Length: 606
Image (cartoon, rainbow, N blue to C red; front, top):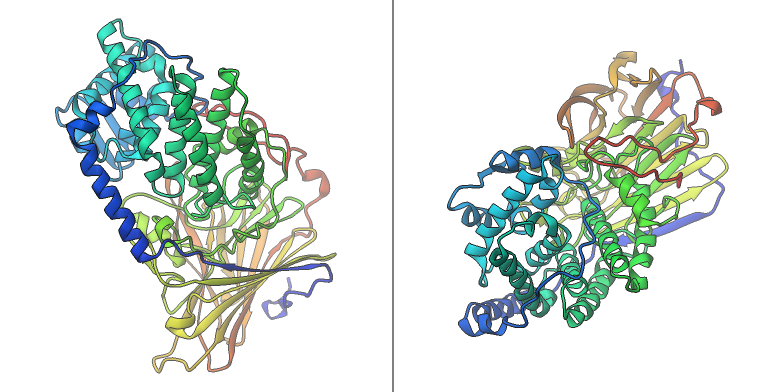
């Protein structure tokens, strides 16, 4: 076994070098934001008047023109909870027969989109007893009509209204199955009134996913309700504007949240099905956008079909991404480099490296965002090796967003970008990335300025994955741009391991022996200018859609020196040499879906 001191530096490659600089985008200026809020407040006062309620009157629709159905599976457990009398979402549980149910739902910011947007209809539709499902849907819909038949600031917000109208139209058999003709007429009239309101306010929706959700609901109303041509036209206009400002040219989204990427793709696929159901021409924008976004989504996937834990990803229902890619009808291969977003993917045989060189999103789109820039994940075939912690609700939510919850370097126990309850603050403003795909493998060199002002240091990370995928060589450098604090400056280099990995230290702490569930072995080694630099194993957590799992992390702790740079070299090397070619599965996109999530095979794109 090679001694740890023999770790070679990342080699220079001889291919074409692609150099990119990614700058964090800014939101609207403060005065513009204040003006927007003031205008929205004034409009809200107008919406609460009797005059506005009278203006929402119009021709009473007698029927729907169609209902294309919802292509997306729901959560069966949440559906069973509903038929048993409780709405359960994340850490919230409400009794549906509570007289104050809708008041309480509207007052909880975390629950509001799910409850007021009627996303629970999707879960309710997944239960095996349609009679009980229809009864619960009618109880909750009647309750909403009783409480919110007139304008209410939270219940009639653009995004919630668009979401709710879409769910009512897609799940019309659930909410309109009653024999009570007065109730059915009331629901149809409520749809038309809300569509007229959404026609006026869809442009006021918050940028990003809320604006796209509002536009989607308005288009569905235009397609599926009588006399909806103007609603459809306005919705298509707002959809084009919202997609143009939110979806980047490389297929990523401005918020950098994979959950937003998935939600946008689901909305576009739902819209396309509705156009086809009505035998209307599908706007070219829909498929063009899906064609851009699908390769980006594929770039986030490991060979086992799950997403890398990048900026909140990792809690998607099993099989959902495969279903989305199949229904998208987009054939593009996984991106290797997303120049506008900063995501990098390297695949060498069945070894996959996913590298996050994405800048923090603009402040107004950074709610829930993670400070994980320059972190990476590594998988060996269907075994995950190096991961990030993931995302969670409740007490673990803040912890999962920290830099220390990601496989990267933490300097001075500080996050690379300040984390606040409502988003990300000061920190990284600029990232430089160079990628070279040469004969010997792929070399990536990236740096960020997140510590530049606060600690007078920059972080540069170099990664080289060889052509056969059996060795990843890394180097982390701390570049000093001033004097060190008198108290000194410490760094922590963390590599979180998947729960399926067993680990033990070797060479007195200079290495860590790793064993995967497939019985393949890897060796982690570390060395640096400090001869006392050692690797230790500490407890960690792994968060996914199944819950919280105990795991381990490799921790390398050291001190920044007075030199211009402090360097740590490390490597992950597969024991036993290269993986035999015959062990490589042919279908790299195959995944196994759960019973609750039907999957459609998505042919190999990676």
